[in-house]
Length: 304
Image (cartoon, rainbow, N blue to C red; front, side, top):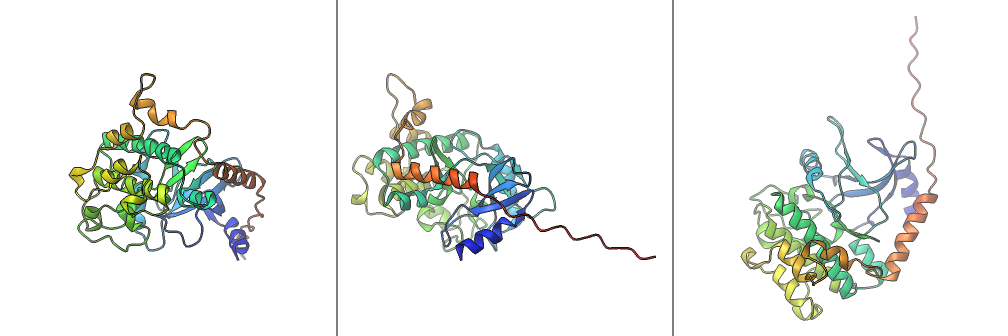
């Protein structure tokens, strides 16, 4: 069934891109539909995102456009998006990457503490940059984190502005991971930077234990204080993203907070099984042969 679905998707087009395969496994809780796709001429491969069925397409398009303002090595940059009048989509450059839940499945359980710390420092650095621009990500969740060999990427900006209008309860809405939703945001509060920090704490809890709402004793002792502080119910009790970067990767005499995240991403930061899965993904996509597209319909003949 999966093979037939893959063949069907490989003949589909979204914008100028042919779909190759889905990035996320069937049934996963994801903020949007994500595909690996390629231009018709085969020259460029991208990660293409489109809204979930039932999502507000105008809101998705607005979030996609706003995401172009996010810069930095740990953010998946938006480089192409739907034009006026098109069904919404956006594209980011493709690098071999696994969504965090897939990485845990490949590894066979929670990730090593060093990996969790590196992921957390990099993502906190990305959020600190966004917050300094006056932006709230609002889409941080385990599925929004992609692991590549050179570091994590934060995707799904806005998650269609947390999937619901301000003032309305957001619990149970499709595309949102309830464990990564700050209490004030779940009840309808406007997404703000402390909500991003809560969500990042849930992501790190997931990476370290396999679920977003662990018991405190389940967390690795060295990470317990910092993750618990992110998950404080009162937003005022949570650290800032910049403080979180320093807590996860404190500067030494040889480096500063500004380069701390990159220093943690030294060779061996990812487990071997995850590295092997990234290599397989890359090889399979390079070898992928897409079937010919259906011929366009013949123009109608005008009889005289």
